[in-house]
Image (cartoon, rainbow, N blue to C red; front, side):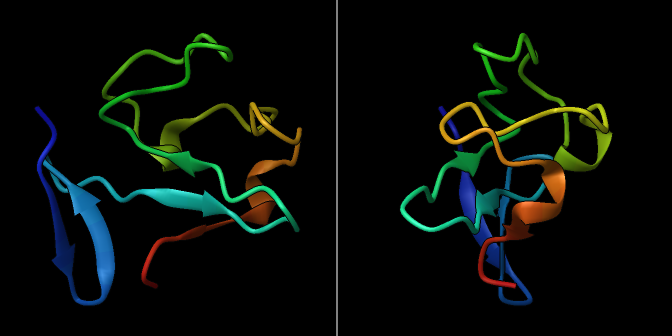
Length: 72
């Protein structure tokens, strides 16, 4: 069971990792490190900062530069 809390206006999950949200129009996908990314074969527990540089949003295909920490 995931535990989400706010830490200095950023949304973080258990373990201190932040949730990041895609900023492209009509997407809004949230990368949650507690869930990983099945489509991208990213296992649970991988922080957004540790995703490969060529990782793409599983919904719209945007790159990591289009993501911002939630609440940040």
